Image (cartoon, rainbow, N blue to C red; front, side, top):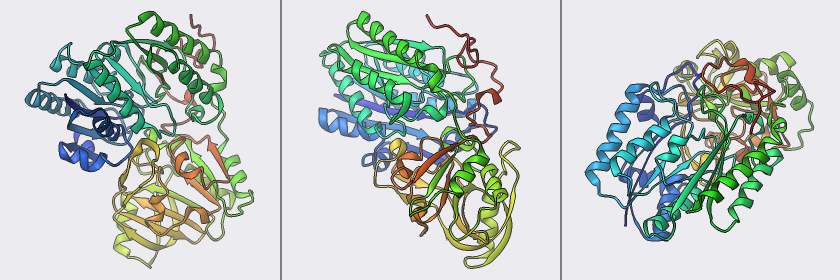
Length: 499
């Protein structure tokens, strides 16, 4: 049983000013053949799940191509054309195939295709034909479309946020594919798109209204005849018509059951729509709350929602740093945070470890994320920014690369980690441990994320505060100038109806 596995994975923030070109994928992760095994066979990603699935269900897995980069702006036509052309070439030259595993995101947008993932599925289907089963895995932040459904036999979506289950979903997709090839099941899918969004601050699945929704998904999964069930939370920073919440149920040949259960899930979520909207904390209040908290060996962690790197943030917002300075936060190890700033890193490297330096940091991408802030400090360490995370974190990534990185201890008691690769959020504490920094020892830790850092920081945090900071991933959805989204869509139009 020969199975092809490939993926073109991206979460696209169409409000981000930095376009995602071919070089961005090449610089971040562009793997072919055995390179995929080297990076993913012992990680916790969807592709890792494919490798585990091949062992469990005894098929010949042929990893062809996998590329992704951190969430950034719209993918250029050139990048799309070059990557999909190589995908087609590899599928055609290495076939025939008994099945295909497709590792996509579900939130990708290119200059030509608003539903890029649907177009990739369509392209793969055109190559392998209608008789070769195709099963696709998607991120929980997917904006699922009918085009994606029409060009796959089954879709499996992550069920946790932070995303700690990509490996398990990869194994699940492998099982569905093998059973389909063997004729043991005949997958039928039904999709219901709900005219609402789930605000980014309400998307954690471990508590609150999203836990209720995912409990409903598990309940549907327990029904006889149901092969898989999924919620697509939607990626709200993609200005496309299909942006929003969706529910997908896959059954064994029972279209009526798939439709009934998908509608039931959708109705249940619609009934709690008001509970799924923004309730983040104003920035000044977040800083004050953290600064006055009883430290007792556990830091207060503030999520910089407006600079959520996991959602397309620029990684260099200074809004919360400015608030901390304005508040007067100071003292030994009072604050830890990271900033993307290649210019500042170069100046620190030129100055040297152990030296004192005065320089401006942050806010180098655009005018949405604050102003550069002058700091005075000592250069503690310079590293290559590479480290390994052995335990499951958001997305299952094991090998990280922030590029050349510098730790700067300021005279106010801040530790600022400056790095040169943008699209990596604070998903692992190893980012700091690898530099000799213990985040547990700081009163306040600011993370450039909303949900993705939770897996790393919940175990050490006294409290996690969602800060309502401005930026390209703001929780204030009224701050975005949408031109392509559906109308009506809750909560933009509070009188939206769902029948």
